Length: 439
Image 1 (spheres, rainbow, N blue to C red):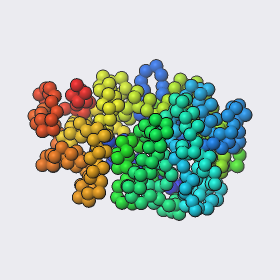
Image 2 (image 1 turned 135 degrees about the vertical axis):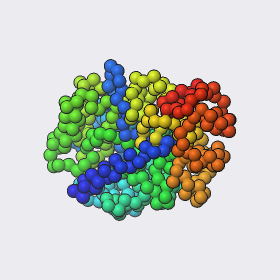
Image 3 (image 1 turned 120 degrees about the vertical axis):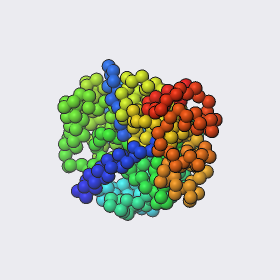
Image 4 (image 1 turned 60 degrees about the horizontal axis):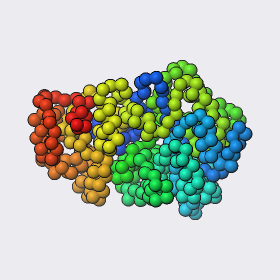
């Protein structure tokens, strides 16, 4: 377990580096970890729950709640008590992830050596959206949001340090089929359109050179991450009260130090057993919600928070926010992969063209080109290659990083068939361009 915790620290540093790098290009897929604080009378926070739904009882039960036969039901009951809504990252079913053998309790392979099994080994039918329709409907009927965690919850690619024995998907076709399988289940059975996804164990690299962002671009999803760990997934300390305290204290201390510290943040929670087949979330969650309520927070779904504050680096009371929210809600590709907007950055020609595309256009065009080796090579080097290819403007491709003036914009808009009334300017900021687009 020490190796696992060390690996997480190293991975945190790697993620920080990758996040900075991800601010270079606009992307149809944004990794959403948090949002800018919502300015005004209220404070907002989103809460996410992984690996459910689960139709097995919590361990131990919380006697204050009647829905003791299912952890997911208990979570729904607790959330309802505090008028809170969450985003649930659900799986389809892990029942076909056999043959396998159960791993050692208290370790990363507690649920299976070759694959994950939710809610636990040999109890797969008691979890997942395919077998637990009633729980899914209860979540939706109670105002909670559904996000994809993959149908079978297999890694998108290998991870030798922690999950070296784990099976994984081999190429983007397999990843896409897995995601599409869960998506279609929700459309057909629940009339629900998923728009967010979190990769199993945050493994992004696919063996064929693509990654989770490419798979999510095909699905028209955004990548759901989190900025605050609610805990409850690590092995038990051997003292249940201490396990609960380990979940509650970080949130409590953060808000005592700064009551506004979690405004706009996204909390990770567990809708399932931890590595010791315990559920401290059952007792910690009511405490989390009470602390948040006492500090003036409203707990909402990720998508609701996004409508209030769509990016990490904006002020939610600025006058250009309405244009951003309108374009974002229509699926336009206006933000960077790391969920920043950079309102005061001077607009480049590549950005100007890319911001006229939608997730739908990007997905359809990428689907046509996904097996074209020449396209893949250029696209993975510079995502704007897709934009210029789509508009048949590859002769302008070498100008992707040049700043835009009104003549450039008028010329390129005419070429792609967009009719806009453009005032004369030498340079334009990105926050001003959204007003032109949204007219």
